[in-house]
Amino acid sequence: MITWAERAKAAISQTGQGGTVKTDETAISRLLAVSVVPTVAASAMAKLLSSVLAVLPPVILEKHDSSLAMTEDPDGWCWPYSTAMTGAEIDNFKARLSKFGDKGLTATDCEALADKLVLRDREADLRRVCLECRNLSGYGPASWRCSNWKAAGVGASGLPFDLVLLLQGCDGFELLNCV
Image (cartoon, one colour):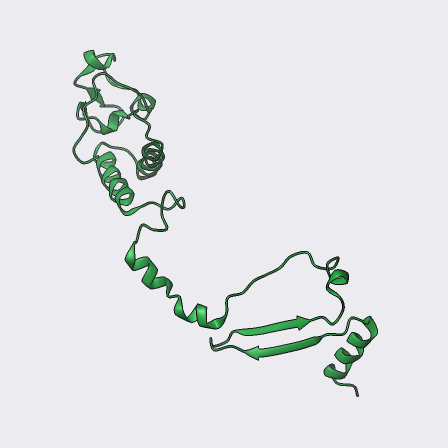
């Protein structure tokens, strides 16, 4: 019976590629490195290579502590370097969820609108929604009213749901403290 090592040696010798295979355990537990060093000319191998992968030596990996990097600047990996919210954005998001819920919006609508406002803030868009305004009164879509309706240019009767959630420029807008 032939062993797997003998079969591998036979397969390598049949291809004519030759080469040295080395497997070693690194200092990092459960991390193995396998490298194949071909014996053929590099120009012949260029046709066979499609990409190159570089791996840091174990010494560098041991020195890097990602938890230390995160404690130095918790917002270092957030916006504008990724789509993750910064601490300030999270605080604003939570305050908006609370305020919008207090005005009668469902949890789903609160979250969708708060997400929309995070993007608005990142783009430095100056438009606002009625739910951010001190002049909006009432609880829920059926009872929303604008106490500054003349300056805002809307009717004295109730405000439609879509208008209250619409980003707009309003002459009667007065910002709430918590939003």
